[in-house]
Amino acid sequence: MRALRLGCCALYFVSAGLQYNDPDPQAWVLIYSAAAAALILPPGGRWTRGVCSFVAVVALVWGALLLPEASGVALSDLTASMQAKGGRVEIAREAGGLLLVALGMVGALMLDHRARGATARG
Image (cartoon, rainbow, N blue to C red; front, side, top):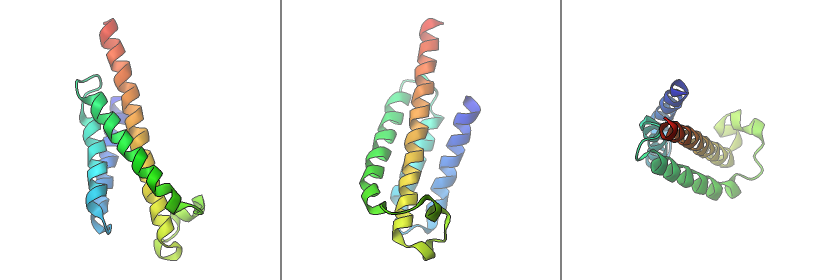
């Protein structure tokens, strides 16, 4: 599980780094870096649950706010050229990225819960 956690952490850092050409990179760098930082925290650690929960809620709320603007985008459009499809595709991709952040944080919370249980039993 540690390797999966570190792998996801690395992917979030790479995602943050890829935002350099985005029209609004600051917010995206922040959310991806926050997700990566949350995964650096040790499972069962004092701050882990709060940080992961906060990042998950922010990602879910932000993604939910984007979804109405992404309506009508087919899954096949997500891999098409941005110029060929327009702004809705970018918004759908952003919502997908936020969903991946939220899922990663939920996974980390599950590992955190498991680590806390092992500590309590041990």
